[in-house]
Image (tube, rainbow, N blue to C red; front, side):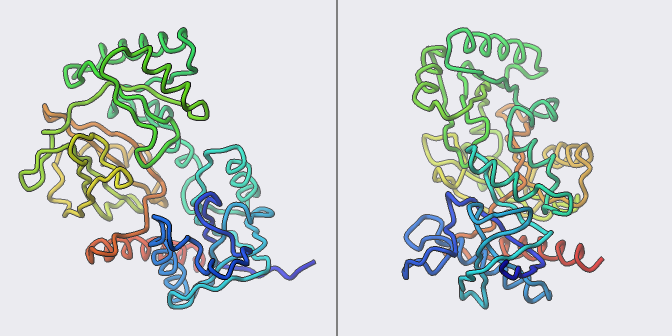
Amino acid sequence: MKNIVKLDVLVVYSASVAQSASVSDSQSIHPFLINSRRSNYNLSYAYFLDTCQKNGLTAGFTTSADIVGPGQCQNYWTSDQGNWTKINGMAKSTQIFDKISPRSSLRLAERKLLLSHQSIIPFNDPTLFSTFYDKLLTYQLLAPFSIPTTAVLSARVKDITQALSQLRQLVKQHPFSTDFSSALVLKDRFGAGGNHVYKIARNFSHRIQNLMSKNPEVQFVLQPFLAFDHGYTYQNRHAPTDLRLIFHSNQLLQSYIRIAQPQDFRCNEHQGGELIYVDSSAIPASVHTIANQIVQQLNLPGSLYALDFLVSNSGHVYFVEGNTGPGLDWDITKKLNEQKSKQLIRSIVSRFTTRLTA
């Protein structure tokens, strides 16, 4: 049996995004392809591993496809001052920084294998991951703060009609029902990045059925459309804007806003949204109040997560979704973004260091 290197920390990324260290192609000298839109991830994860090294921790980076057992991989990458090296050998760790998005049965099985022993400790609470990964579960846990949400079980007319009826009832019971327009939002129940998010203004049943039939692999939830293009303004910019607060160890670590492109309501960077880091004082007090109530309800002092909010045009605050894996990359043209991302990485590594030296 091959010798297994014991690492203090193992970063595991979805194989659909990162490439294995086993790839022998001479052009594949980084975990993320240079000609892809995620090429800058090479900088952030090199910084992650290098920061581990500076803290006296050994660390490696692998993909979900390379997982061969609980906390074990068959090959991995290392970094030394930003220079990536492929290691053709097995490694294991009990401390896992999990970046697997279980969107397919294969990714789900890989993640399950990775965490399949009680000795394996993921960075974040597994229950919180499962809750925030599922938008319906998120709503059910935090309904008083959230936009009404219901599941569309299938593209059958019966299930669509039932979902529409359930949503109408939820909106009717909402204390601020007039915040919602007559339009609806159909979105991927397990999605991210603003993908598979559709605004539907009319012919609801027909449009929902059409979209679901075109995307049979996607499970959807349905929400009323919230008018929020004038709810929060930054430097007199009137546009759909969401507000993200990142908490670590129950403390607010960072805050930023994302402003949607003209004619769009999706604020995600992957959809062209502009990310701007702001001081916590630029976040309305009403948002801080709701965020702190959610933090207290979750009561997970060891976890890192982001909470996303919208402010309706009438000034009411709505929790949109949570994220246990906020992005660690940065826009290389913006120095502040780099500084903030590195701060987040250092906070994560500091937590690993505390765990391992306790």
